Amino acid sequence: MTAMVSLEVLILAGVGSPAALFAWLGVASLVNRPLPERWTGRLAALCMAVSFASLGAAAVLYVTTRTGSMVLSYGAWSSSRVEGIAIEFLVDGLSLAFATLAAAIAGVVAAFSNRYLHGEPGYNRYFVLFAMFVTGLLLVALAGNVEVLFVGWELVGLSSALLVGFFHERPAPVSNALRVFTIYRISDAAMLSAAVLLHHVAGSGSLSLLFGSAGSPAAATLSGVSATTIAVLLIVAVAGKSALLPFSGWLPRAMEGPTPSSAVYYGSLSIHAGCFLLLRAAPLLEQSLAARLLAGGIGGATALFATLTTRVQTDVKSSLAYASLTQVGIIVLEIALGLYTIAFLHMAGHACFRLLQFLSAPNVLHDLHGLESAAGERLGPSAGSRDMVASTGLRRRAFLVALERGFLDAILDRLVVEPFTRGTAWMMRFDRWLCDLVGAPAAVAAAPEGTGPDD
Image (tube, rainbow, N blue to C red; front, side, top):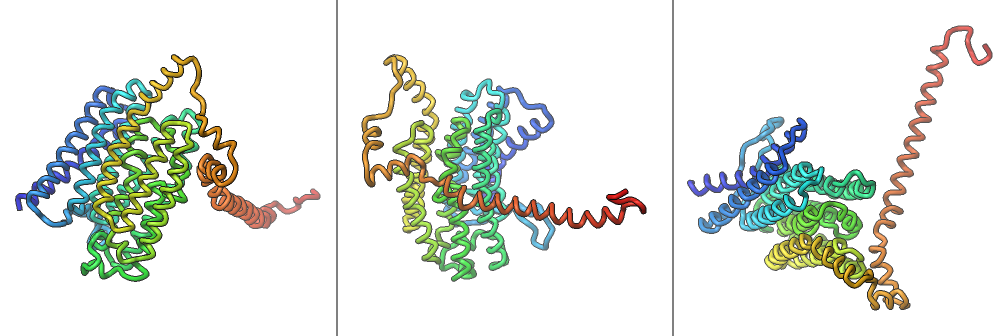
C-alpha cells in the first residue's frame, strides 16, 4: 500500500511540475507581467529536473516492487454524467520508460534554450509553449483513458504549430505554421473519431481496451470491424502527427521554428509520439491483419521516400528532418512486424541521437561558414549532384521526385485544398443568393405606400 501511494505521488509530481510551469508562465503572460528572463530559465530548469527525478524514481519503484500494469485515478473533474471524466494514468514499464526519456530530453532542451534564446523578444513565449508541449507529451505517455490522451494530443499539436510560427513578424513562418496546424487537424479528427467509436462500442473510454493484451476480457469487447476501424483511425492519427506518408509535406515547413524547438519536436520527441501511441496500441493491431498491413506499408513507403529526399536537401535542418523521418518509418514497420522491444529501443536511441544532431546544427553551420570564409568561396553542389541533374532515365526521375519532395504539396493542393476552396466559394455565393432572395420581398413590403422605382 505504501508503494502504491508513493508511486501515485511520484507520478503526480512528474506530470504536475511542467503543468505548474505552464500555468505559472501562462498566467504571468496573460496579465502582462512576464517573469524576468533569469527567473524563467531557472524555474524551467527546476521544474524539468523535478519531473525527471520523480518519473525516474517512479520507474525504479515500479521495477523493484514488481507491480503489474495499473491504472492510477486522481478523481473526476467533471460530473456531467454519472461516472464523470476522471484523470487516469495507465502505469507500466513502457509508459514510465517513455515518460522518463521525455522528461530527460526536455531538461536538456530547456537548459540549451535558456542560452540559445537569451535576449530574444519571444523568450518567455517560447517557454510557455515549451511547458505546454512537455505537459501534453507526458499526458500522452501516461494516459489511462481517451480523455486524458486527447487533451495531451491537442497540447502537443497546438504547441508545435505555434512554435513553427514563433517568428511571426515574417510571413513564411506564419504560413507554414498554418499548414502544419491544418495537417494536425486531420490527425486530431482521426483521434477523436477513434475515441468516440471506442465509447460507442465498449461504453467506456478506458485505454485498457486498446492497450490490453489481445486475449484479455477487456480486449474481447473489440473485435472484427470495430477493432479494424479503430486501428485504422489511430494509424491515420499517427501518420499526421509523425509526418508519415501522405502527410510528410509539413515536415520541412516545421523547420521555421527555433533550433531548440526543432530538436525537441521534430528530432526527438514529437515525431516519435505517434510511434509510441502505435506501440501502445500494438495489441489492437494484432487483432486486425488489415491494420498491420496498412501500418507496415505506410512505414516502409515513408522510409523509402525520406531516404531519397534527405539526400538532396540543401540545408542542415531539412536534411536532419528527413533523416529522422527515415528512422520513424522503419520504427513503424518494426511495430507492424511485431518487433516491439526492438522498436522501443530504436525509438529511444534515435531520439537521443537526433537531439544531439539538431542541437549541434548551429555550430555545424558556423564552422561551415568559417571554412567558406577561409577558402574565399562558397561551397557549391558536389560533382555527384551535377552528374545526377545531367543524367537521364530512372535515376534522373527519382532525383527530381526527391528534389520536389515527392510533389506532396502539389498533390494535396490539387486533390484536397482546391476542391475544398471551390466548394467553400460556391457555398458563399449560394448563401448570398439566398440572402438576396429572402431580403428582396421583405424590402418591398417594408417600403412606404406611393414609393417605388418610378417615384
